Image (cartoon, rainbow, N blue to C red; front, side):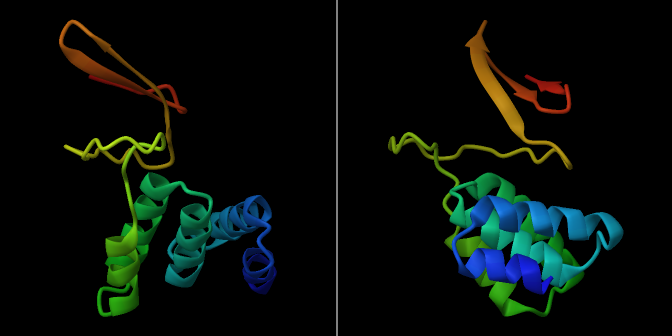
Length: 118
């Protein structure tokens, strides 16, 4: 974990994310690793992904107020800076949204793992 923390401290965000993800393969319920990954994702501007990971860490360590504070500070607004407000959020474990489209009065969201939500 110290290698991931060093990458994060040095601003090597992609390397930090990868290192945390690799460490989580062998220890998926480690709240420290999840918190580190959440911090690295948030630093990359990936607020939705960070919130999923930090929520997992908070569920494992509910007494940790710093995790709740980190979750509260995340912005999950669209990345284009528009003034849209988040109406709902669906978190598919182990996958990230890959694209979205609006048709027939519905919003369709495709996930990297192949799931499609409407």
